Length: 264
Image (cartoon, rainbow, N blue to C red; front, side, top):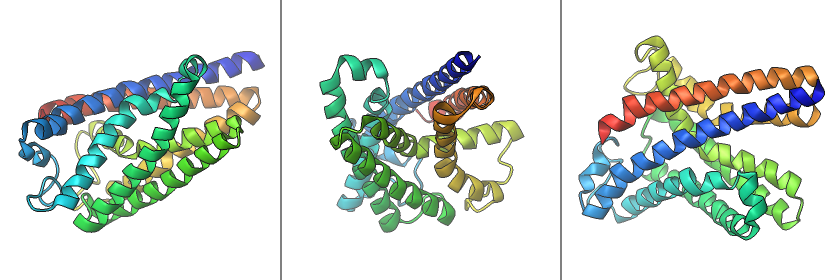
C-alpha cells in the first residue's frame, strides 16, 4: 500500500507538471506572437495592446523599454528552457546541458526579478498597489531560492539543490499563476466578482498574494508528503495534486481562449 501511495503521489505531481508546461508553452507562444513580432517588425504599438498607458512601449524611455524587453524575453526562456531543468531524463542523459542551462536559469532568475522591480519602481504599479507589493515579495523570494539552488549545487548536495530549484521555478511562474487564478475565478463566478478597475477589490487583494504564496505552499506540502508522509498523507496529497493539476489545465485553457487568442 505504501508503494501504491508513493506511486499515486508521483503520478499526480507529474500531471501537475505536464499541465504547467502545456500552459507555459501557450503563454510563451503568446508572448512571442504579440511582443516578439512587434519588436521584430518595429510595430512597437503591439506592446501597448495589453499593457496600460505608461507601462508598455514609451518613446524616449530607453531604460524602461529595455527593461520591459528584457523582462519579456526572459519570460520566453522560462516557458521553454526553464521547464527542461526539471525533467529527470534530460538531467540524466545530458548532464552538461543541465549544468549550463541551470547556470543560465539562475542568471535569468536574478535578471527577471531585477527588471521586474525596476519596471515597478520607475513606472508604477500596473495592477494596483497590492499587486506591486505581491510582485516585490515574489522577486525577493525568487532571488533567495535561486541563490540557494546555486549554492547547494556547488556544494554537490544535489538533493537539497533540487528542492531549492523547484522553489525557484515555481516562484518564477508568479505572473503565469496570476493569470490562471484570475481566469479560473472569473469563469467560476461568470464575471469579475470581487475585482475592480483599480485592482483593489477583495479578490484582487487575495490574488495579489495568493499567486506568490499559494503555489510554493503546494510544493512544500508535496515535498513533505513525499519525503516524510505515511500512506494516508501520500494518498491525500495525491488527491490534492490531482485537483491542482486539473485546475491548472482548466486555467490555462481559459487563459488561451479568453485572454491570449483574442489579443493576437
